[in-house]
Length: 207
Length: 207
Image (cartoon, rainbow over all chains, first blue to last red):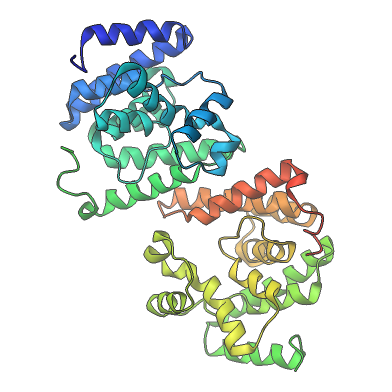
């Protein structure tokens, strides 16, 4: 059975009809499109990027107790911020659903799903593409800041991840919300990487 | 030998004359004064607060290699951000100097010195007082933001720590500097505590 097939895409979109609201499905399709475009810009596999885009929000509307139970059952390390805001686990749990419900075995696609909300220090270019598409797809708004980050995302994947994390942290501060430490670790890693290209192994873009 | 004596204060100030520049000594005296005032406002031991203020920057001007070597010798856990910016270790190393050079044994005073830059989740009220005095003493400037935080620090220690961390994180983002994960952990803890008073053990203020 091919992992990346049109019929499986249809299966996923049909499943999403009963698991997330219509507005979220539109977001998912916009992430798919933007991830494909960013992948093209940066020499990343476009099919994998589009796939991770389609699959990234499978667990978006799972209830907190279900997210926590699935994360615990999978042995995921839980931060106190995850326990206070189990919704943050929808990314990691989404990768579990992609694997167990849709038979996705591609480790990079699964990682990109798992990393789409908090990022991860050193995540590969495919994960960066999906992380950025989720944050910056056109439905997210049209502020000067978002326009600037979108432009940057087509030019410099590493700097765009660092600065998208910055925006995310700024918003959390403004809203008095908890900041997940992984967002900060991701942000620090990508800021350092954007200054020190030696931090990026040569295989990073093609990983 | 009394730990908190005028002659020891003189010894410390004399030692500081050859270890930190004059402007830094003025900062230290302002921290001492503000820590004493905040302690009075919040029912915290004023003598300890003043002492921690006088002692907090003993290692401020130590060279990075010396800070790293002393931290490693003491078995302190080092974050990658500490290794990239050893200057951040001056707080923890300052507590070691206070203990080894000046014979300070009071664990709360030593903790307040060690916590004055990054804070610490759940740190006690004495540590909060010194953390806030270091960030907010009059020499730090007179922006509307600082005036607001100063006012808050006299009214609500917990909220003031949370919001002072927010300001610190905002500044690091603006300057494209690394954010130490402990600043974020401290910030999250104090934001949660400011909303859920049950997080604060009854002994917290008098600890």
